[in-house]
Length: 328
Image (cartoon, rainbow, N blue to C red; front, top):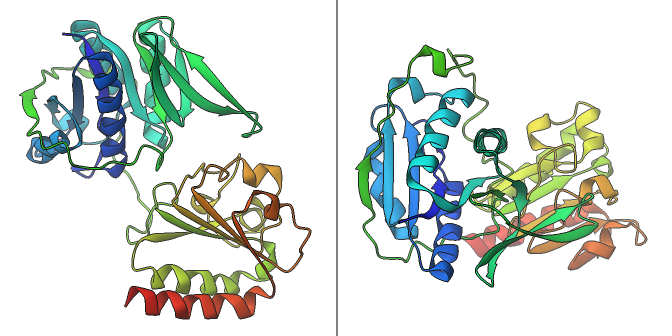
């Protein structure tokens, strides 16, 4: 039976949160179409150990491809295996996370299959038996709906939008996927990955993002944001505007905006950020937006759900103190 394909992304042998979100979204589509969810994991030895957990998020079948060749991401290798899987099993839609890996892999799969592709979707629904995806255009100034006219519809999903519940109750039937590949299937082989500090939560996946701009006046003052992040007990991440990243205050991995990362956390706190359109494009879909700025006319207040006009150097310490009390 053709179903909804869900790519379950892993990192260092562990299933990432975005994989749960993709499977959750696939479950919603599958229920509307009366079909199944087929999740696929690729990775090195030991990948299968956690595969069954995807059943809790709605996967009917979980296909696991274990091979030393896939211990690290390979664009060509992954594309070859996934395209072959979809051609063999068929599917109405192929869902990927809009992560760095997903944005690289999904269009390659679409091109290999000769089908359409829509990136960074924020909603999915079925209208008259046809899959319709909602996605922002022109830096979020326009929201469009794209109808899939062919099969499969290859889509990437924005992180933190399709919230996983983990309440399906299914065990998830785990099956072995044949991943017999050779060097000809790889355009390049990744020998080593040098990762950044692992103790920090990825700003693109954090449920709470606290971003700072030039209003902080100095890179040293980002410690105020880091203290607030710490107060949330590992549930938050530090973000930054393009201006402070360009100035060398913060790494590019923390940049939120059109030329940085697009985030959709439950809570986004913008500190000392004026609200340029480039920045708004990366965070306007956040569920709740709080802006702290001394300028009452700052554009960020037009987007914010809550605004605090005042001195951030007085507001942040008090906010941190209250959050610590709340989290105690």
